[in-house]
Image (cartoon, rainbow, N blue to C red):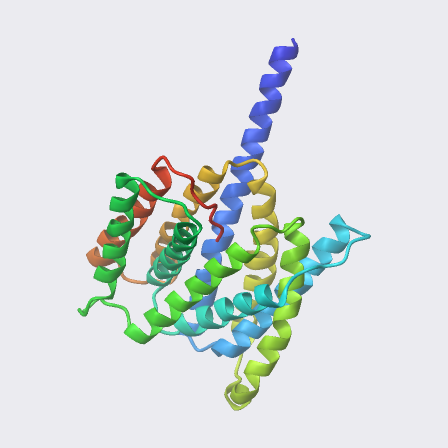
Length: 296
């Protein structure tokens, strides 16, 4: 009787973890889709999109913090806020000229490479299988950026890689956070001064219609604010390996949604390079080693 109850409890926890993880991955992919949807139709400019996204995300996280920790204040660091701002600012500018799937692949690849490089300098070493996977992933990114009819604009690709490096650094800075939700809320709030100062030179270019504002708010409130909170809840029930591996789904989800919802074209080049990058990272994560947990 007790054994059956224990089994049912374990299954319920597994099902809850699966549901939370699925929702979080969809939210992360939705950030790419919402940003691309707003910017490709000129419904909003990149600076306005980033500003609204960060402010609405900060408000949502602050409200979640008040509900969960009525006696706790938000925390955060200026370093965390700066890396969050660089990520979001570069993310928006890159998506002006990048398809959804290509942008997500570049972002995801840069995040993982940043985390793996950090682990290397912290003394972590990979097996031969892990090294082969790393070379495979790097080769896939290089192949994606090589000149050709289906190659992404080099400047936009470089900006997205900067965004990925910044998010990787943000994840590294947040690894030791005692209360991830409070830290994330604090970083969002502290990022607003960076955003406000950086927006000054672009005031004359501000433009937004109802669709652009809606996409920016949805990105901030749902895909960022609620998405991050749900992901933190899922992380408690996932091993580090599973938490890292499950994120391989994000570029795939973003690519499929971009094709189905935004009518973006499918290219053999993107398919092959995606296989190389994601497959290579899967080999790295699957190799027997001490891996650094990666968050996206």
